[in-house]
Amino acid sequence: MGISRKQIIEQNEISELYTFHLRNIPQKVLVEGRSKDLPIVINLHGGPGTPIPFSVGCRGLFPVFTDRFIMVYWDQLGCGINDYTFKDFKAIMVNETTTSSRLWKELLRLDLTEELLEISVPYYILQGDTDIVTSTTDIVSVIDASDNPYLHCQVIDNSGHMPGKAGMDAVFETLVKATTCKGEESHAESNERIY
Image 1 (cartoon, rainbow, N blue to C red):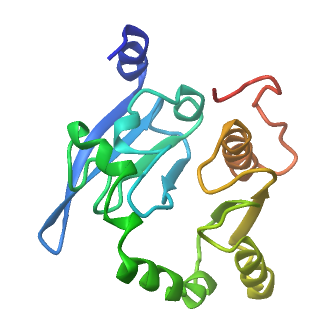
Image 2: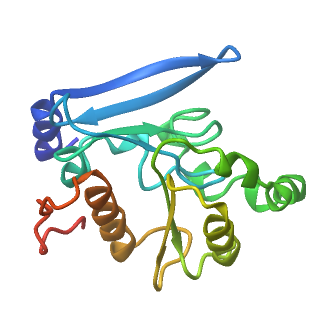
């Protein structure tokens, strides 16, 4: 761990790794933020197989986010810290998800429309316009038809399933906008960048 990353972690008022048990399966969750009174953001990443970019292994890596928010990184079961260790990093890129026809069939049939309609807290889906894993058109249609004021979708131009620089900037800008009171100027500087 580089000295700057270590200093960032030490400066955070909260940087804790928690273990929760769901159906007796241990799940690790990182909670990290500069101050304990910041807005809380729970990251539910895509997948399957990888929690990148926001994961338990990102401790101290995104001070632009942790200076403004308490970031909750919950690695989905079977990726990141929940199921294998860092030495198995290769498994993130080369794993059963690439060859499992059963998993892909289940993913393609998965429909969370009803669950999304019931969302009662601010919920933001940031979706790349060229994502071939999840249909951007379908997500936009469901959200537009939902009439749910808590449900939001932001399509990121020229972005796929994994966020690049523009995607990370869009995530940050969306979070700042979502947590800034109406009429209050955003504290985010226009030249503040994630990478």
